[in-house]
Image (cartoon, rainbow, N blue to C red; front, side, top):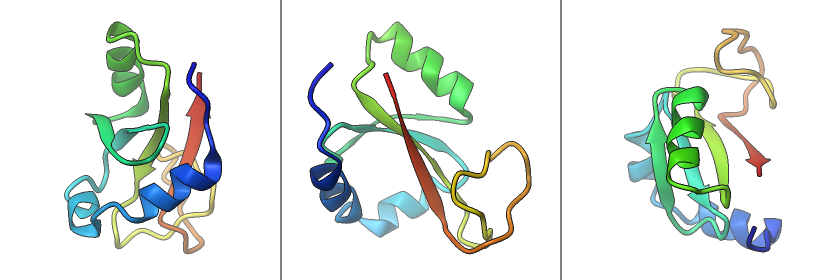
Amino acid sequence: MDDFYADVYMLNKNNYPSEELAKLQGKVVAWSLDGKQIVGVGEDHGELFARMRRLGRSDVVYQYIWPEDVEVQPGTDPSSNSATVPSRQFAEVFT
């Protein structure tokens, strides 16, 4: 796996066009390790994990893009419907 530098990833991801991210609300995305591009999109984690596995991609960061009108607690499972505290997105690194 390529090296992952969280500071570089976050800087680049935070500069990703918000209007493009808005189109992906309610979806799971796979970011490149440098955070410069989205390399995959799925309806849920399982679908996207399977697609990335088929493509041989383990060098990604997965993130659920929360809808703007949902308030969630960091680390909340998007399938649990237990959103409560403001924080729109979370990311996990899977290898």
